[in-house]
Image (cartoon, rainbow, N blue to C red; front, side, top):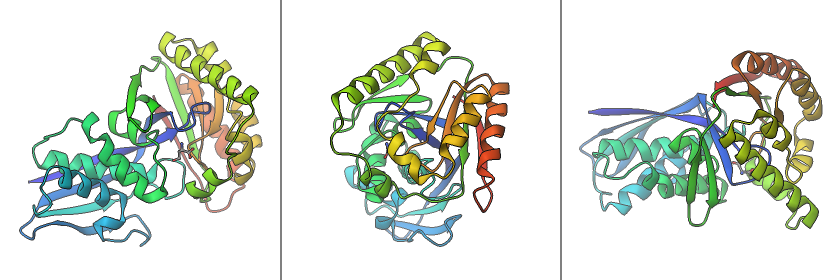
Length: 300
Ligand code: HSE
């Protein structure tokens, strides 16, 4: 028996929800294949699409760590399992690459052994996998990757998460400029303390965005997609960020910001046609960045 699973890319933060809000997109995504084998323990037999960067030691990559953590929890570390990892998105892209592998690893192994845990119960194991890569504990990639749609995290420590409905016609345009930003670096440049005024603005926008999503109020969504904390600092790492923002807004986006820790950027749009126009406008700006870009639109 062989289990093949797909785990999608995610847009974390969604502008005003640093570490507490994220959504999944249709593509790209990572694939993990698992099957039983006679040799006890977890063995990673094949990794593709990683440019040789991922170690095959399961304790050293996010899919392996998530799966090992799950097997340990279930007292099944002696069970012989082979795993293949097929990376379909770059590292350091801001698309939740390491989270996708972690989710795929935990989800695939759980399925192979007869689904003892629910999707939601897999969250801590996928989290442990992702944390092994960037050292931080935030579920805004892993949550939506595992559960789908838009996920709000009330507490990362308690892993108290809620799925938020998406308006019927809400689309995302996502563009990955071909540069790499390490999440660790993008987190280190953020201030430890922020002015009360900024905190108030950010809370207002986050509340507004959640209400807008739930009430299908595109105007309220548009007025709420602003990030006064991370974006002003992180945009410096992304050449032409404001040019791309102007292009996206000019093409009719509801809002635009950095996807996760960057360098990918995203826009929310009303309707598929609008998402197409916006993704084109953003892509044009980033063609100035060398080595070709990747662009996606997705229903949220
Ligand atoms: N919330 C995280 C950050 C996402 O912005 O650093 C990165 O994976």
